[in-house]
Amino acid sequence: MTREVIVEELGLIDYKKAWDYQEQLFKATIDQKIALRNQVSSTPTKNYLLFCEHPHVYTLGKSGKEEHFLLNQKDIEGSDISYYKINRGGDITYHGPGQLVVYPIFDLDHFFTDIHKYLRYLEEAVIQTLAEFGVIGVRSEGETGVWIEPETPRARKICAMGVKCSRWVTMHGIGFNIQSDLNYFNHIVPCGIVGKNVTSLEKELGQTVSMESVKEILLRKLAEQFDFSYISSYENTSENP
Image 1 (tube, rainbow, N blue to C red):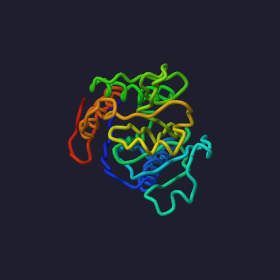
Image 2 (cartoon, rainbow, N blue to C red):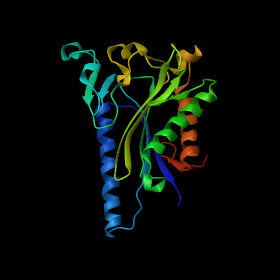
Image 3 (cartoon, one colour):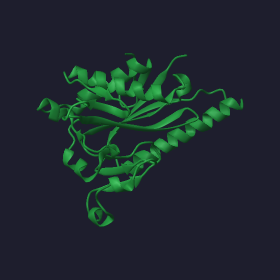
């Protein structure tokens, strides 16, 4: 089976607008799977990979604790900060300009039906991307995402992950700190984990990093991990890793 993924660049987009778009693709994919199962359609499902950044926003996953959000409604009224309770796994996290957000809307029947393996593949793509910049990213046992020196007092998280999966269709995904203003993480207990800090690729390198270069590398690493070819909606060309 040819695994093909449609890559879309959404740019800087309001969180709710991107969430609604994810839901639209997610529902369409599930509906098509049901149609295939009921033999009322022979058109295969599509896979999407959405790249974007968001204005400042905090999101609380369905298993998260509200006390991990350290601001109140009065603090965010009239500010440039949004807050949403959402339907992914995980606790609270922050998205903002300078953070690379990636949303795979994958039909895992095209790949493998194992959500834990799926998360490990996402982590591995990020770990390999960091390696291209000379940064050693690793997993931390029992904590989804990508870390730097997790077993030391200097433990810090560089990439958070939270997903939803239904009928083996995924949504939500990763928040990879590239040029992020890390001060915004001071208003939450990131991912509900106490005593560990957050970092960014620019902070680790001590220099400016091109967001486009990170996107290109991460896309290539995802394609290698999941063994897919891709069609870029903004380049209108087929690519093979």
